[in-house]
Length: 325
Image 1 (cartoon, one colour):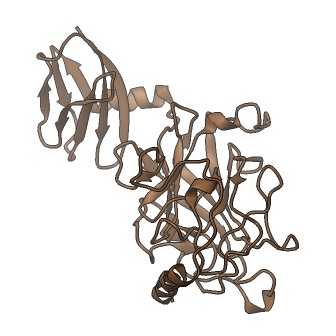
Image 2 (image 1 turned 90 degrees about the vertical axis):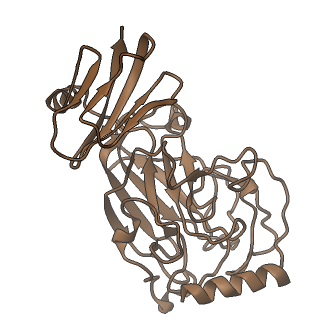
């Protein structure tokens, strides 16, 4: 079903191009100014590992057609595959709530990224994104859509990612749409701790420009996207959620690191028998040393200063800061 859908979209793009108007936001992946994050980026530190799924309709204006059913819920867990089939389709108004190994925190820049499976830069299915620190109280990133609302984009029609912001699904498969928790400062209620986000909710956008069925952005504009999409794979297709900034209990992390790594006389010693990947970064984020085999790393040649050590053992990972005299 998914392959058929892709072929038809391509033909539709040739025969019935969608009208594009204002282009206020970041462009597609690969273009100057894009905010797209590749699934293999070294900036990604972890992925969602838990999900609750509520499927939406194939066509919310004709509920007798039933629900979207493409993919398994677990397809949205761990690293995004970046293809058309290892996803879970939400359908009209479908909802997925994902959880993580460690809470997401409000760090520098984007804090997490949501991956969809569009095969092209201009076939885009969107979703609202909300976050919570208790799984009960959520706050939504304010979505913006400047896509025209005069002509309905049909189920196989095209749109321009430069017309939307704070909507998941802005980029093609393999590239995540980033979200920065800093944007929610002053918006989030006290019940949502932006430095301890445990749940991310993905809600399918119903792209109808008929107000009876459609959904709206934060300014009250109806959001126009391909609709209806009466496929098993209709609606937003979730491939994964990656974390860029995560909260770690510093005391627990310190104890864990002391059990596994020792720094003494300008030598870093691995105290684990398991395979270990280790990287040392300077303050600019540049990788200075990288190792996946040696049990001892000589750091006597490093210049005096502060460095960050990131390690991954077979069953855990962590980070620590150290000072080289």
